Image (cartoon, rainbow, N blue to C red; front, side, top):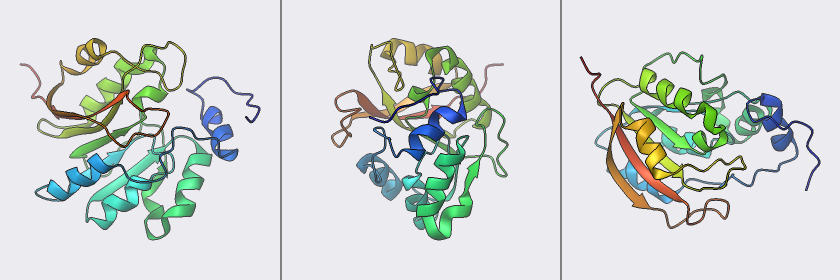
Length: 202
């Protein structure tokens, strides 16, 4: 176990230390099956944003499938790791803060993979509000949600009632399924979910 000096996951330096030491127990090392199935079944390519992308394996997969995908991370070390592995797609990885980033094109889909659970619970409402701000009615929030009741993190697990409390004012859940190919850090505790942005209430 490396020695880490930064304890605040809201600081880019927290993640820089872990990427610099290649200590990434949340890192799958590839593209999960549910995302592959979702892309294969999609009627058309979508403009996709991947916040907190880490090594950004999914970015190359989406771009190769013809999707207009952009990945962002506020950790310079994470961005460097991703760019070093993505070849032709490396320019689509940007160093940016999700809460202030302004996409060149409104995303039709936001891909969630270990971003919400990287944030302390006090930040969850801000994450959800930003998702809702970026996505127009009918756009999708798609990905993996980590359910756990341990207070220590990251990853910070969420309860289903709390997730519904946060998301249902903005989104409706249109699909949910168990995950069979989780990495050990998330095994038995994550769900693949598709949420559709609701029209704002008048």
